[in-house]
Length: 385
Image (cartoon, rainbow, N blue to C red):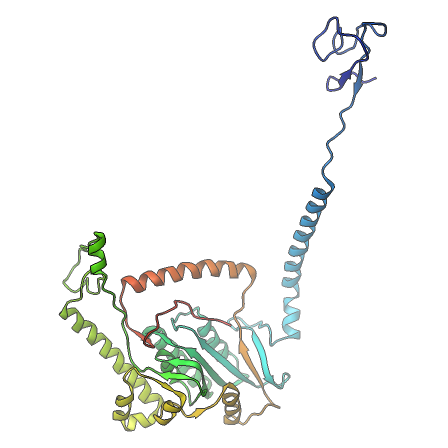
């Protein structure tokens, strides 16, 4: 019989006459008397191990199985991506700097493409934006024969609108491909500004466009600051360095300076329209009459010479094919989507959140002019598909 000190001793009858509690008389060796009244009979009993719940074990097993399956899926996706790219080139691009394509219509096996380039949401600009990546993808793809520029935007920053217009023109000239514009529900101000890269401008029956002008949101919170006891006393290098401060009313001199900035940006806007719509270059007074910041319906825009035709996206696509001698049987229509894996999406969401917060702070503290439709404020985010 085992006499391991970790064993638990039990006794049969009587009371202990000597020995430490929990040990047999005479120590762990069990040297005491055995049997008889008043004598102890000690024997070791092994402790049974604690059993885990069946359901807990099953839960842990399932969690482990799911984790293994997830990592196996990720690894398999990485290993098979080159094969998928060869089998489905429209959904994945092996070329660096090219976005994945989504098939829209036409002959899926045709080499020639009609590319839909989408500008949606507030125009902000940026080298790494989805809009710029679309432009770069088309510039690098020799199979794209014509572009349909789809615009659904109220406008945005002056620099962002000008940035995209410049790169659209470069793409158009370097590739020698026409650009057909298709306006969605809204293509105003900066949205109309970038449309000047187009050769033919379509607008839907219910499109709102125009709003040729500049706006600089200004906020005067001096009354509120006085009520809650807040004052600002910035140290500046010159009298105009602090102009636009939201904690004090704007002086007449500051208003004149801001108005000069607005007028200069407005003049550039009209110059861009005159370049994109030659009839206004011949008769600039006609543009001056309609460039009041007013928005127009599609019929009004057509009457005023701001667009060429009324039609939907399909009509613009058909016109684009006809422009380069293609049809639905010998080309395919594609559009682009942003390429992201799980980790990129998580990192971008955090980066975007910080960027939005910075832009909100910038809007409230740093006045700046916009090519933006009246009554709207920047939503600080360009949309991607």
